[in-house]
Image 1 (spheres, rainbow, N blue to C red):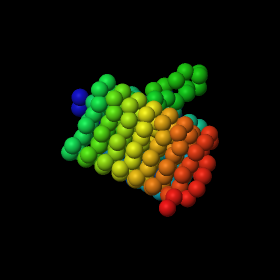
Image 2: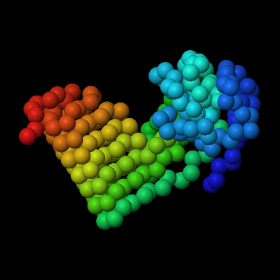
Image 3: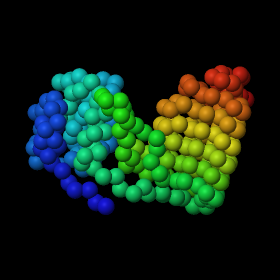
Length: 252
């Protein structure tokens, strides 16, 4: 389903009706079209995005932030204590996600009973304690020579894509959450759980029942021992084991 094009003034009217506080910049154009939500780092003047860690010098159409910053070049800054939550409320009102695209390369093999392309487990807690679902707009990219084992789940990205690089192999029962990127020629054995927004380098090996917390960055040529729980970034060329996982040795 194709989304309706909304002018920035349409969203301003919604903000007014819901008592949001916002400030317009000198770049503001009431007729500007907002085409949809975007990740912060890739947002442009046609996008709506949010930031929880300060206000970078970007030029989005609309940005939800905690504090106004005069150096930000976005057309509209919406100021709130919970920019992520209010961003979710706004995009849920205006932008219906399209069906997930699964973009496959050559020689991709997918096992039985896999779920690929569903929404990830993304929620934000509202002021009354209820949970609001973060709509997912991203796709899934599976590059060449990938093998996906039986009973895998791979969820689509929220605003970006979930990416499985060339040569990746996964065993049975693997879960790869939204926005994660699995590096080239990495192997994930049985029941590995990769949480959201994890970035894994190339040529890694993950032992059975390993778990990785969200937003961790793991280097290349990393060996992860069975049952390890990774809660911190891991550098290149090391073996890690344990709960929490710690570096055991440097790999040759």
